[in-house]
Amino acid sequence: GNSVTQMEGPVTLSEEAFLTINCTYTATGYPSLFWYVQYPGEGLQLLLKATKADDKGSNKGFEATYRKETTSFHLEKGSVQVSDSAVYFCAPNTDKLIFGTGTRLQVFP
Amino acid sequence: NAGVTQTPKFQVLKTGQSMTLQCAQDMNHEYMSWYRQDPGMGLRLIHYSVGAGITDQGEVPNGYNVSRSTTEDFPLRLLSAAPSQTSVYFCASSYSGTGRYGYTFGSGTRLTVV
Image 1 (cartoon, rainbow over the protein chains, first blue to last red):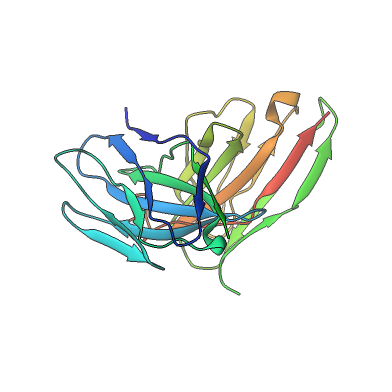
Image 2: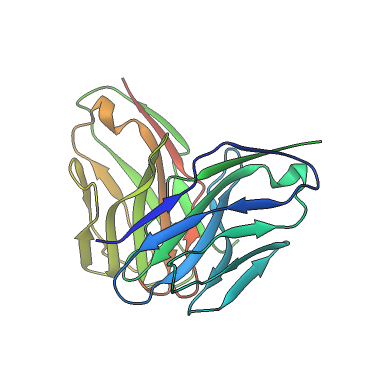
């Protein structure tokens, strides 16, 4: 069946540091790939997406590239802010959306 | 505001009680689903629906029932609550199950079963 593996957190960074959160998946077919973000006490929000190989999704300074050959969709940001502190979920979707366990990001001033 | 509305936001139940978690969306989405979120386990799919009158089981369906009589509403029923059902529940909707356009999530219902 389909599955997704995310790096375990928490990831602790200083403001303006570079961020990478790794995500790999197994899926039949060619899933759409998503990153969702959950701020404290809130539901999940769509952060970015990519629907085919080599597509790059981007939003709010975050980027992720659909790598079909390595079945990966790593999330990156060049300079994190305190306001980026949240839990990030990688989610591939074929006929249903499945989630990784989430990676908590903590950014300190 | 358009979106997914979940009620209640918080609920405490005694073991064996029943209740219904409500979910409504006003975006005319065909696809709706319920997830539970537990620490260290991410979100797990409970039930989903690809349209009115059609429902199917997800990864962890036991102890939960759903129905979809209208496009807008997708309630989740706990028939006899157990402490293992203590969790945060999220409802999500999309134009289609392929989620090509992304899913919209409600703000969640925090359920405690004592």
